[in-house]
Image (cartoon, rainbow, N blue to C red; front, side, top):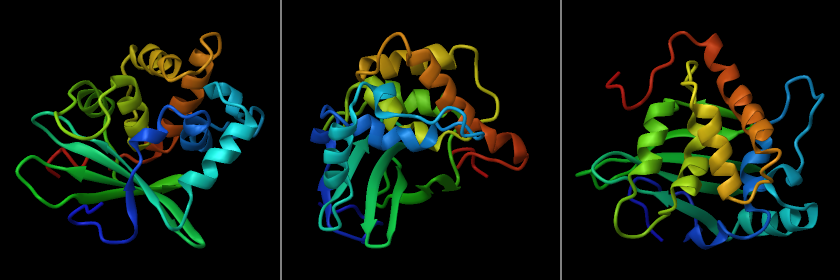
Length: 206
């Protein structure tokens, strides 16, 4: 697979991995931990078990095959998620794609915390809800969860928690704990935003 603007490694389409047990715990568990350590996340929060999560991590972090997840949006910017599996330097890279532009724009990376610039909640929802034709992820719940780690918006609407819990349930998380998991995710993602008054979205024109 080739992505113009990103020439770092052996890219392969990763969309077929989304329904596999263990995917969402691998992808999201690291960004829903309690800062105090009082409530450490486990794969069960996402409907997975530890064996499934361990097995899929070997696929996701294979240095010879870097999974790519395309979240193209109709008529506007989309997101490409890439597992950058350099030995000793594992990270997840986030690229923006723009209509009419052939090259993707690398805007952020996540290795624990986000490095770079993220998006607002409204921007994430627009991307999640407007899938483009062609290749890539079409399911709105999976699209929202894939772009969720880019959230750096300090002011979330009241509907954000319910929307995220619904997406988690659709992806296989237990219904009776999805709201709690969503609370942990949003608390972790917005915590640093409250301490950065200069935050701007890369789509804001700044």
